[in-house]
Image 1: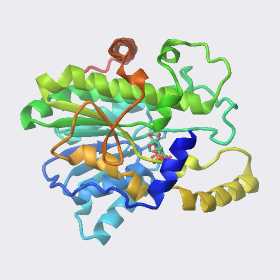
Image 2: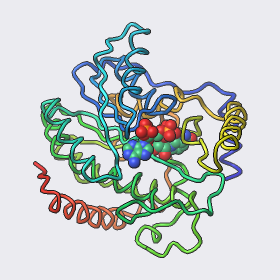
Image 3: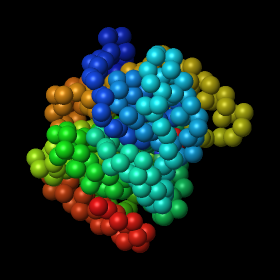
Length: 332
Ligand SMILES: NC(=O)c1ccc[n+]([C@@H]2O[C@H](COP(=O)([O-])OP(=O)(O)OC[C@H]3O[C@@H](n4cnc5c(N)ncnc54)[C@H](OP(=O)(O)O)[C@@H]3O)[C@@H](O)[C@H]2O)c1
């Protein structure tokens, strides 16, 4: 942890890697979780300004997100119609089903890049306090960051594969975190959460996402031209850091103080978006890799265990199939 902090601080004072512009016209992209002041917001804005047709998602702030992104595109002289927003709650089965049905109908099954960016990290300042479980009974980081993302991706896989075959290049970019290295594979299948820590729960969801990334590459790159990359965006000043601890004025003041302090030590979202943008656009993607600062990096040793990736896929896939069966939502 100490060496990571030192490296991070050194990077703050050196030049920040920027993705090279790529013509994205003709490419359809989904970026999940693009609230203003977030990594997803900047990712979507850059890709749309490079010509991609982009759909962004929010749990319920659709108008704010779409209006703000369109205004920003107008300001830089880009086509504001390149962006549309739609509701998506990864923890809600119906919402994920509705989003994919809406997307497929409105975009004629065209999808080249899925950026699984949406995510949460709760109780950052008070990690031992366990957040409430989701309404379907899961630990909330696991449900949002991993299971919800797995569900969404599974429903979109048929069109990603089709577009990979047709265009020669489809991608899934999963926004993960360096905190994946805080946890071990055995915790992926162990329901006993013992001493709870929200940092470990968060890390576990991101470890699962990296296994998922590598497994997509193994399963679909060769046959369908569907590549996959995992990204660590850096330590970035976004809404993720806003505390939900305390109430009213104390919460407000705490957030103001944290915001002021973190401005000096965290990246701005535009820099945090660069690695996702690069993985979504570069013609020289090394699929099946973990990327940090716009280049491939080593993920933890745990992520290299192929048997674990496969087992996790099979278990998650069985869970999604049950959901699909219960909801009558067909995958084709
Ligand atoms: N910030 C960092 O330092 C950092 C470091 C490593 C990794 N990351 C990862 O980067 C990604 C983006 O995070 P950020 O820092 O930009 O955070 P953020 O500003 O809090 O944005 C997170 C986005 O995720 C969406 N989201 C949250 N819960 C959701 C749910 N149940 N269903 C659908 N969408 C949901 C939010 O939706 P609403 O628009 O509705 O609020 C929001 O748009 C996350 O995966 C995070 O884990 C961040």
